[in-house]
Each structure stands twice: as structure tokens, then as C-alpha cells.
Length: 319
Ligand code: ADP
Image: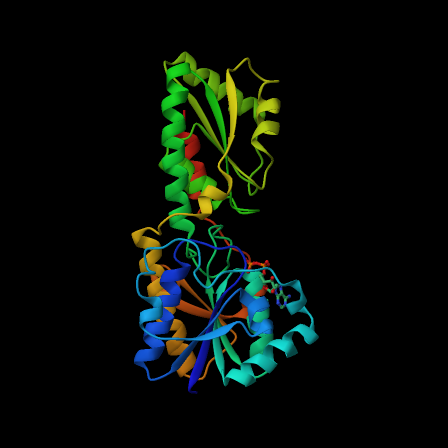
């Protein structure tokens, strides 16, 4: 193997650039030539491909987003789309790839491996919804952003004795809501993985205000419902001065945290080691603080398991 390609695909996440840098520098150090593929699978098919040097990835580790850009390209699920991509890989002499993205991106990577082009997947998404990894690249940074925002919301909530419903991203995964909720001392965390009891939440908020708390914060995962809808429901159970707030895409931006930069670096280096060993169709992750890899086929059969102890703990601490 002489040449590898790197692409980022699906939703962007802080730390993707740190991963690209680690893959490129490790590969160059191992004597490989490295090609950046812009705009994910769309750019692969379009031949939007360029040779990278060590300097290409300088000054990138601290930047949010992905400098290789990302794009959705559903056509890659069809064989015709994949064959167009392979035509470009042949043209550029690229024999193997590292794909940074979520589970959809892994499907594309597995297809390429099946066509004879080894591809290794790295979990790049703020949602933390990828199986066989305790953390995805971008999750910690998104939690940091959510906590900063919730701390600020708390200041204004306290001044007016208000209840705020803060909707955080995460698609169908409640991890951001759980981690950001615990870290910001939320009065309630509402996630898709657990049923909620609106009466219990309202009673807890009322009790908190009666006990002298100056505010109430509900951290709501986007996979449950909108903040406005939740607020309307809550008001049926109590007469609160309530406001709804949705953090939205701001959570995807910003400079990656230490944890995300280091995680991206470790995963990126390991991805190249696996390619050098002639392996493909594997997804790299971190489990119990160890870098691991699992076959993508195995991964598609599994679900991400969040740390539900955080949810249970918060119920006790929020009283
Ligand atoms: P994520 O990688 O974050 O889960 P998507 O589900 O949007 O995001 O997938 C990103 C890209 O991966 C898609 O736009 C498409 O190009 C490719 N992809 C998704 N599903 C498949 C599939 N079943 N087969 C091949 N490629 C796929």
C-alpha cells in the first residue's frame, strides 16, 4: 500500500480536523502518500481530491468543523454511486481510506472495503450514538458548549425565578442531555431512552422553587420533542414562568476540547496502523479507556449504550 485517502462525512463535529491531522501525519511518517477527499462521498465521486503534505494539516488541530468539508450523498448507497467513487480511487492510485463520520458513513466505508479498498471508520459526531465506543469525536466539545450556554441561561433564570426548558442536540441519543444535564446541575433531564412523568417533573420544579431555589432548568434531548411543545405540556401541570430555548447548531461549532483532540489523535493514529496491517471494514473506538476496533458488520447489529447511571444519579441530586 502506497497511497491512502481521508474523508469526513455526515454531520461535522469539533475534533474532526484533529483526526484528519493525526491520520495524515502518521501515514506520512509511515512512508505513505496521503490524499484529502473534499465533501465526503460526493467529493470522492466528483474527483475532488488533492495530495496532502504535513503542512496541509498544520494549524488545524484547534479548529472546529471540518476543513475537508462534509456533504450528504445518498447515491453512495447504490452500487452505481460506489463504482463512480472507485473509478476516482483508481485514477488517483488510492488503495485504502480512513472515513470519519457516523454510522451512515460507515456503511459507505464497508461497501468500499467489500469492493477491495480497505476502509477504516472513526466515530466523528457530536451525538455519541455510535456503538462500541464510549465517546465519539465531538461529543465532549458539544457538551462543553451546552454547559456554557446553560450556565448563562441559569443566570437569567435566577434573576427572574424562571423555569427554562433547554433543548440540546443528539438526534435520538440522550447522551448530550445526560452529560450536560448532570454537569450543569439540571432539575430534570428528559431523554428518549427513558419515559418521563410530567407531573413528577412539575412537582419537583415547584418543590425546588418553594425550597428557595431561584430557578429551574430542564435539559431536554431533541429526540424527545421541541422545547416549546415541552413547555406547553409542563404548563398544564403548574403555573410556572417558563421559557423555551433551543441550542441547535451552535453545539456543532467551536474549538475542540482537550478530550476531543486527544481522542481524535489516538483514534487517527490507530486507524493508520490498522491499514498498514492490511485491515479494512473496521470501526475504531475507545472502550474503558482502551483503543479498540470492531468489524462494521458487528457494529451495525449493536446499539450504543449510554451511561444511564448519570440519569438515575441526577434524579437524586436534583431533589
Ligand atoms: P452519519 O455518517 O453522520 O451517520 P449520514 O447517515 O448522513 O451521516 O451518512 C453520511 C453519508 O454516508 C451519506 O450521505 C452517504 O453518502 C453515505 N451513506 C449513508 N448510508 C449509506 C449506505 N447504506 N451505503 C453506502 N453509503 C452510505
